[in-house]
Length: 328
Image 1 (cartoon, one colour):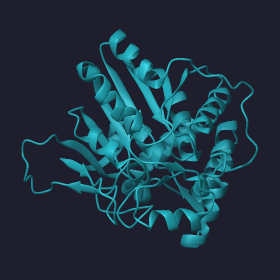
Image 2: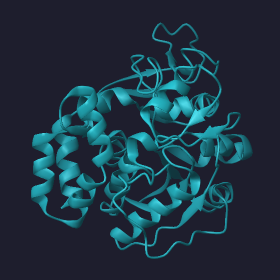
Image 3: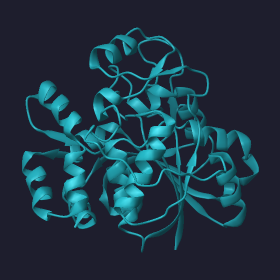
């Protein structure tokens, strides 16, 4: 059985991704979840992860990681206007995504775990112990890559123990959701993303673009999820309330996308991948319009550079069936 470490900045889509992992435990042994600041601050990410643990009646260990990006400051923002102003200033400040996921990251519908206690080991101590004690470990990352970049820097002699890393982040076609070019996770900590993607670790990158095309939950799918009538299906739709309002304002339609669950689904079943390429990916770390954007070497101009698998499209039907099965 595969050994799995999940790294998350647990907001509303991370929470659903955790449910997919927790409801398919025949696929992997989850060693623990490390959390990082991103969608919400570090403490809130840990609290939200514990809520999902309790929802699924599990006691998966939770380890706190980094509260800010490697070289940048991090600020909580609660409105789209402030978030856009900061992003479009093209400076070095990173922000939360609480205007997307809610102040608490779970739609602000009053969800709190009964028990708020976490492991005393840090995320880095957890990684070191896990890689020493196991011959092979898989990673699924759902937030900014700060924790994983520090793992790369701190424990280079243990990286061969990482079988594969599945990353939700970036974009293969310069499609951004923070700026014109940058996906949120890579925009928050572009330095970390560039370090991880070029670390030599075997990587599959599931960016925001396949999520937008193939993991969009429209009104008819929302109804299908409602009809499952389980605590998991109710939770999944309920916590998207802030995101659904934003999608309504932007696109004029009810719905929400699930990038993190799509990444977890690819880990669980790689036949969900429809189209992908093997290519070197660099992340722009410069302040400016293209900060956090992905630069793909389609022409193989640097043939010796480390290549990763970049997912471009997924099978929508396979993803949605796995989602419904996990929420049933």
